[in-house]
Structure formats: C-alpha cells, structure tokens
Image (cartoon, rainbow, N blue to C red; front, side):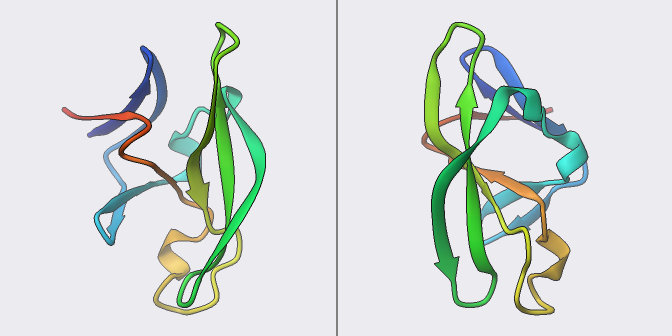
Length: 98
C-alpha cells in the first residue's frame, strides 16, 4: 500500500500503483480529487503525450501548485496502462509505504 500525504491530508492511497520512471502512478479512483483542482500547466513527454496537472487545495486555504500530473490521452501503447493515472512530485508530498 502506497499513500501520498500533504500536511496531514491523505491525497491518494492504493496497493495497485504502476511505477514508471521511479514514479508511482495511482488509479484515478484512489485519488482524493476533492483536495485537488486542475492547473493550467501542461508538459509533453515524447512517449506518453501531453500531461495535465493538479494543484492541491487544503482546507486551511493553502495551495500547492502543480503537486501532481496525469496523462488524459496517452500517445503510445507502452504508456496506455497509466492513462488517467495520477503521479505526485516527491519533493512536494510525503510518500508512505504501509
């Protein structure tokens, strides 16, 4: 089980993540999207496609910009397993393995 925590708030939890390039990609159903809002940020990976980003918005009014990313439409068969899965920046959140 891998958990993502930010300032005591659980953002994601799953025992079914997919690890790609050292990042845990979480199934969309395991992510607490109530604590996230869509960001205007995008980036492009040559084999995954265009990534979209989330900001974390905590109950105390604190916002952490671009805390996570996902690929809504992957462009290669190799990336298809992580389509719509969400990954979090290791330097912005805490990861716990339980």
